[in-house]
Image (tube, rainbow, N blue to C red; front, side, top):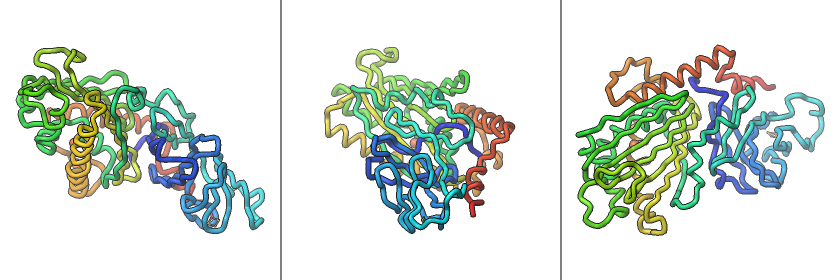
Length: 359
Ligand code: FES
Ligand SMILES: [Fe+2]
């Protein structure tokens, strides 16, 4: 598939995996099992037993090993077959599953699927806000039946909000001065915009003083490879600079992990700095964002994918608009990084082929 391999992807949320969990995930077409050892360390190993290819997540968590639920082979956190109750596989190189580097950071589990040396400095520091105190945060994951680059596009072009999320996250009034400023610094793409003197969308009403008619609305987007987007969005009193007293803001993370060419795990974290103790506001924000992600973005992107008939948007020669500037830069940067990786001999399908070739 058309994706970077030597990079970090979100494999799960840290609090999804307790000391009894066996979680199966498919990432870049590779079958992965997530579990915690008895010392609490989260591990990622191949989820496909080399005997009859049963998924290990249907087996038993034994503390530091996982027992295959079919015929009882056991595998430890290094992927080694640590116990074979039947004998006969001693010394066999296939008596193991792959082991993948996994790092727990910012409340997420980051997996490295490539064979090049993992570089922890590439885990985006922009995600640190996810575990910062003083914010009200919730997170989750949805499956979207579409190529992950369509999700990068969706976030990097917020003009869709004025139509798809009109009234809740955005308003059509934002269009009157919608001129995002797009910048590329090193391998980071940012897009910033202000919509001046407009009525605040409904999401923000609980955080604003009673009687607020209009605000200066802002959004700051940041994309880091391969598919990690941070969005800060909020309202300011008219004419005030970013960070002024009276500002209310939400910061959200959008982590897109390719399952396959046309399926994506969409990990999201949403946090706000206003009314953080209020359960009513919490319910309102959760309901509004849930509606936006699950009932507006997801069906539209899945229908878009179906109409495309291919995971490769650019092969269809799409019409490009001014509002696509950030998304196009993201696509170009990502295409270059994937091409660089291929020139080093990396094959995105290599891991899946190796698994399939096992006797
Ligand atoms: S399939 Fe796992 S032990 Fe047989
Ligand atoms: Fe959206």
